[in-house]
Amino acid sequence: MMARVGWWRSNGLALIALAVLLPATVAVTTVNEWWDYNSGRAAQAVEVEAGAEASFGGATWSDARLTRRSDGPSLGIPPGTKLMVATVDVTFGPDSAAPNGCTLTLGEAMGAQRQWGSASTDPFDWYASEGMASYCASDATEPYTVEVPFVLPEDAQGPYTIDVSVGEELPRFLRLRLDD
Image (tube, rainbow, N blue to C red; front, side):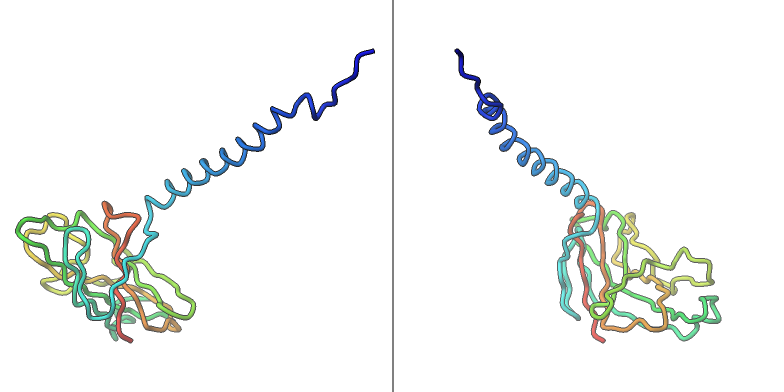
């Protein structure tokens, strides 16, 4: 009489292969998806202390400041909000070009750590000050100052940060800390 081989014994090699290949497949897939997700968004901050300047995206970013505009209500911002304007000086050398576009966001460094995007396309009557740009001009030939409005809830509190994302630098972005 022939002895029967159990299911576990007859499938042992396949089970060992499954035990090795399944976690490896999950790991490779997860790392690949994580990389794709993070490579197209601002995920790795390059921190810059308040008052310091930094080279990033082919330019030097300096003199970051934030001011509250008292004329927000007359410009049409919603009740219960305040208008804050961030300005940053952008310089680049004769051998480098202006950054190929950028995005500025404003964030709370502490507390709720909320973030706000530019309000330059919102329907209120705001224009950049004379001699300043309301966006990062990729065709600039001279240093310039970018001035971006943000509409924040009245309860937003500093200290604040200005995050600068330059497309070809992603997933890295520049985080400029501001004094309170």
